[in-house]
Amino acid sequence: MSRLVLLGPPGAGKGTQAKRLAARLAVPAISTGDIFRANVAQGTELGLSAKEYMDAGKYVPDSVTNLMVRDRLAQPDATGGFILDGYPRTTDQVRELDDMLAEAGTSLTAVLELTADTDELVRRLTLRAGTEGRSDDAEGVVRTRQQVYLEQTAPLVEVYSTRGLLHSVDGLGAVEEVTARLEQVLAQAADADAPPAGDAQAG
Ligand code: AMP
Image (cartoon, rainbow, N blue to C red; front, side, top):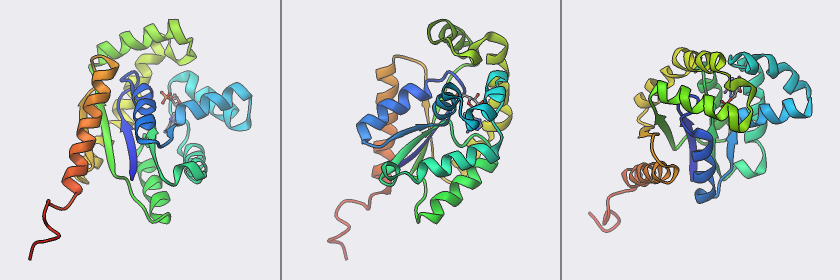
């Protein structure tokens, strides 16, 4: 069963890789950013409360985000596993996610971190502003988002590393190569979890 979190700074390719891995693992890719953007586009109350934070490159308050994720993880398609893209992003969100999973009698299977150089990321995101027209990809906002990531989300790497859940992968390179790296660490993690071959006969 795959219950995964994808961590990494804005522009590292989380969205792209989450969708590719999700297709291969047959689980939903759940992107909090995508859910917020869809709500903004539809003009829902959730969208209205999120928009000003998103446009400024800041995090939407945990109280709003946590409830939204709780609701999404309770949908039937997420009971067989999921890949979270862009959540958790604060230590409070880590705790909330732990609680949500514990209530369901489960826990995370792995956390995948995509690493990338900040200058390269600012270049990528500024390019994306041209192609996708995201309002939070303007250069000043891009820098704020990197800063917010460093302050609020980078500490999660240590949290998950201490739990033995973290696998870091170089996020630079061709999309296919990065996916292959992620699949490789997942396969290694699965092997490490499996009992040694022949154990059943031992004794
Ligand atoms: P993303 O597409 O993941 O880069 O998210 C876009 C924006 O949505 C972020 O800059 C935040 O404003 C908001 N957002 C997405 N996920 C979260 C989260 N877990 N906590 C708070 N805000 C979030």
